[in-house]
Length: 340
Image 1 (tube, one colour):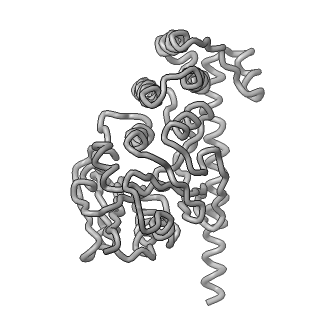
Image 2 (cartoon, rainbow, N blue to C red):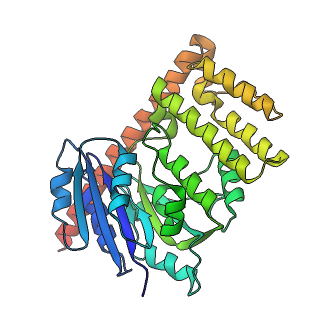
């Protein structure tokens, strides 16, 4: 019998996008599937929209607000699938995404093989998604994947993964105490349990950019900065558990250097811990350099105002891009309606 795939969707205040995400899940050409939506105490019409899709193979659950990790754990506890497909309530799957990944395994499928796929960013128009490959877009060992992720500051979007039940059980539940990068930490544990990562380029995920970049998500929040630092420490520990070599330690030092600017001037206590960690790894962190467009602000007003500008100005650009793409999206819709 062909494996059953569970598509698990945590949702919070996603009334404008949950319908499109659910339609992409329903449209999967892989026939043996179940879909489980967990509304995490939304304050809008997310639950009502999701309930319109409820059927014998689409479950819609509701719980009080506990965070995305808790919603994912609830969905996982109700799932029966041999494979798990995670999907956020604002992202989309190509119709053949799951089919292509399972077919890539062949008849002698190994449950310890972790499947990944290509992914592209979009705002409102998925057909305009930009698929930009990085060094993780290939078959890799768990060690090499994690080393590249840390050293080069690259990542794979949550929905690219198709995870066997065996790997899911080995990884354990999502950590509900993670306030930053809970998905990155979770998939590290999945990676550690796997034997190999198989990349399937023909399978595609469409990632809707709704929050800006990582820097803007963390912002100046002490809680989020502390959460990110905790996630970074776990990442380095996971990598070193696979291989504690000179190249591993060098990758960890570069990882610290990559993120130093996020904490610089905001949390000197964490910066001190990072410097100490780098020294223990045999390296040394250099003072971060701001991009040239913020450097002059630093020279005139200091690091704090330069960091504020680095957080604020990209958000203005991002908001303008959203408005423009939304306008084009509605123009295209009207054009298609006129053709009909």
